[in-house]
Length: 304
Image (cartoon, rainbow, N blue to C red; front, side, top):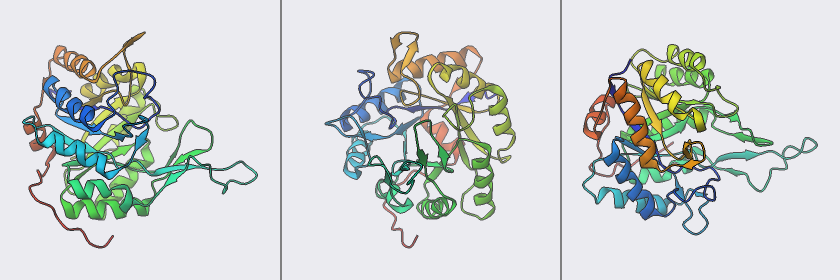
């Protein structure tokens, strides 16, 4: 069991949840305030997606990211910022008779463009979806190819930004280890085990244990589960020696019929692991545990 837990709060996500709960932070001010609030509640890391302030829909607007990050950095709360690079990988194939007639919902860009905001703002962590997979939505495929990942990790390594390798299945871990062997990732690597995202690894103990058993020996890792499985997967991750992630990106409810806030989810997860005998790491402690580099100046990146 891990007795010194890092809690990450995924405060917003990119799913169509803006009309499902009044507690979802949408504007840059709301997102920044939420990142600070979850840090005060016990989260060392805030994982952030931005949204269109007018519609609430997911966005990859660099200026929205800049406003969020600037607002967080103006405060005294030393929360670790983890920005997504997952936007821009959405491929909606056409009908079986013409699959290359892509749907209007397709939003597919290259890796350099996907992490443009990260290279500008220099967070300590950015998420990196470590492979393509099918979603449970018609002909929707999330695209993250091996060459995209090599391009992204090469650039992130030059900047000193730690990729959080989001893995949805065993093959994603296999390729992450390949990137390590190619020198594309600095030690220790950081993994996020994404449990229960259809159609990746089903969220259960057997699958989490299999994924943990396949991680590199020196890896830091956390895991999350979706919906009602959020807290069970958090407890299971702690028992297997990992860290945990909770938040409205993954689950909207505190209990059946009761909508949660991000702070409430962090507080619930903290209570669970503390009752299990664990303590919670501060942002400063987590920074040391994960081998993060706190950026002090902009670094120019050239090439791919």
